[in-house]
Length: 441
Image (cartoon, rainbow, N blue to C red):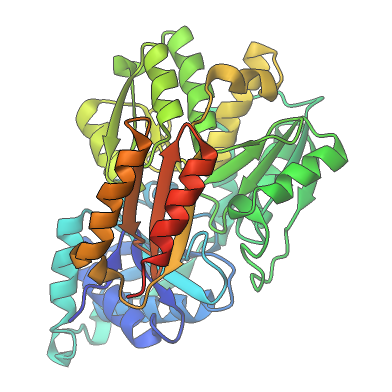
């Protein structure tokens, strides 16, 4: 069968590519890998329309494997590790397509330690799926898994986050863009608990407009909100709440690299930056990398994806790592990226330094970077597109060592991502557009 796991679980258009039949099989096979008969797996979901349907299918698959299910309803993806530990479960599942639009959905899994699955484990699960039609392998009678609901534990997750950073946010005005996703249910309560004055936006709970012209993938929205409401900071989440992009008090958009640079600079000055390093991906802006080196901080790069960042963090003993997209892992606090937690870490710097965000962001300056997503019928053909890579080599010479070209297939969508970086934004745009026109496969 074709590979079903991408860079962040299983993802596709719900009821077309990601069907209930596939969700059942993935639930069954994953449960067999994560737990033994009679043990527990927790399940959370975002609020998009297809999440109820897929939650039911995954639950049925897990119960068919003889594993019990604890359902928590609508929660951020990043709540799953906490809920695994809270219930002493053997693993966790999140039904969400993160930053993708509402027609998409996804299934991602966590181990009993709260980490996402390694590629080797996913490959083993895919092999297990091949034998799933053999009903003799399914549990029966008293061994079939049971389902319980523990939505009451969600409040304890908010307590967990605010206890990690018990800040006094009184007098601070915060604008929030909830992306019409799970943050609508969680984030306002967290900031209110710490005393902030809030301006809450894009907080429809139906999930039908999740990520639509709002949230971290449309940061201009939070920028405009901040300027209109005269807020001190704007925070834009993605659909499942595990990443964020912010706006300073002037409406300037600050992505994950600015956020990491501000936090890591503070940690270094406080002598709390373990091993004096940060982990990011090969997509990192050269300006970000150079700024950290100027601060005397070592930068390690990995393949794109928070899973690879986490693996390297564990290997190197780093407490902070992440991506430009705003998915940031604070490993001394938690096992996975969490948008609210990252925002609290940033607000902690804001309060301790007693400076506006626009001043703190001067710690780095970005190189002009152009990113174009080009739809592809068969993105697997990219690696063998000889004419395309010959053109890349030709255009790299124009950069004259003052930039780079990075092209890769998306791990979650049918697109090719073209990134060009240069000291000249005009040149970067020109090169990116030339390469985009060559993608016809």
